[in-house]
Image 1 (cartoon, helix red, strand yellow):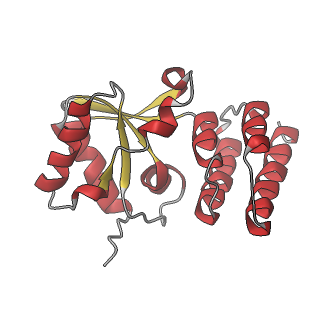
Image 2 (cartoon, one colour):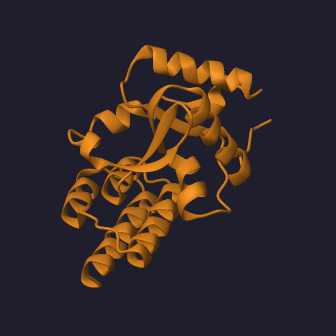
Length: 179
């Protein structure tokens, strides 16, 4: 049976991380989408990356999953690889929540898109389009050229994947033109 976390459960997990775990964390993926962009979004796991990148961060997160009566895979820190691939990732963080012991950050709109572009599944595309809507509404800055360049180098082998890439490229162009 697949675990499905809704907005309320994701919020409780994020609050628990900020209240019980020391340090700074980055919330990305479907968990962030549910809390920031699309309240109806559900996810199988909450992607949280420790800013220090230490193994102790990962172990603390897994221990918290157990304490919250969640399977360890429900709190995922493996996305750190994709975050750390971006040389300026530390400058691409925005405060999101603060708790008794820790702080939760979210990626900027640009970093969010960069993280989604490499896979760009149907759900990733939906998330990217929701982000572009939020960016328009809230006046968020996006480095469209950087995201478009990253999108252009992603190899797509099937027609559906190319269509998703083209759809996001069109949405980025429209976003850029609307500024």
